[in-house]
Image: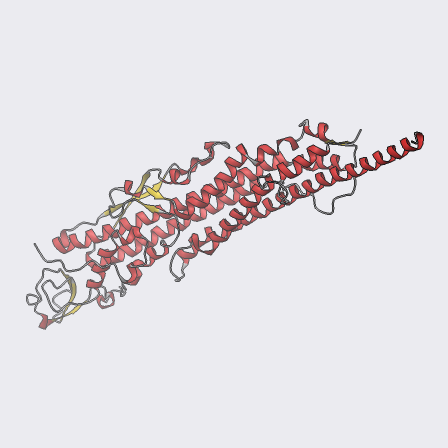
Length: 126
Length: 345
């Protein structure tokens, strides 16, 4: 199977579509997910720190009963946020490899061109 | 018209309660409880009180506010506050003003939004949500992340990376062991993970928040209604004496909020819209008709029962959330590809 490395497309996809490396316009998938990720993390924190908490300092079985939801919700939100974080990391890794592929291929191609030039010069000295 | 024996009071334990209570029946109940926790010597009106006669031929009894102290001949009886149950000699206990608001206190503070009307226990339509507070903001953020993300932005942009898409062959492919071959294999689970874990997890989380909000709103409404029934019954008993019957208040719960998933994966739902679903009757609770003290004690028992019921609903919600989240999480992790990128394509 031949190696296909479409350098312009990989650069476009890595920088423009995936983004997240500061080189694109900030509208990439990773940029979007990072903003959402931060928002979701805030929700997880707020849910446990007071948004779902009732009562004014007294404790009791009923208060504990209602607080169980806040704890469980925060736990599940955190699970989700961590999972989402892994996905963002995966996309970042994918982007790096795309750009590195393009760069490595370009380097090899430049080397080949240089070699061809050198051969051409050898075969056809001016 | 007889003078009222109590004055509504929205201070003290009522001051920090949720507006449902503060603008509802709590100030009236608070005023009554304060009046029932003392013996006012300066009537009329004197306020209801407990009379213990020196002559054992007379049974101790609760006196209504219209009963003149002179008429009961205070010289031959001792007056006690209604709340001082320990003087009954039948195992009754003393009641404190604060304990009547402990349930409402527990149901205050959760940022689940505000309702448009209060103070009308017979008209649950007043419970229509004006705004869903933090629950609405968080729930809508979750839902927007799920639905709009999938339909419009990042998910659509990732389509070329999915299995079978011609993008790979055209732009980035190679033999086994090459980076593009590995990349294609790693991307093969994006679709499944996205659809089966990410989208469904966000739905479960948003749905659970909405249900929790509805449980709290329902409990607040029911407790405020119970306070209203208590206030009405105490007034009725004071006006009519032994003939007054125990008042009943309807228990309400939300319905309809369980159908969020049926909105479909592409259709976003709005939390506030879901929380305004009408209430449905869910049985009635009767207050014990046993006079002033009996009514108050009955209120505390019914309020405890309401809280038991509410925490049971919350426990059921937690169980359901756990089960659904586990199903969503079934063997599905986000694809990963960490470590240093190789040098060559």
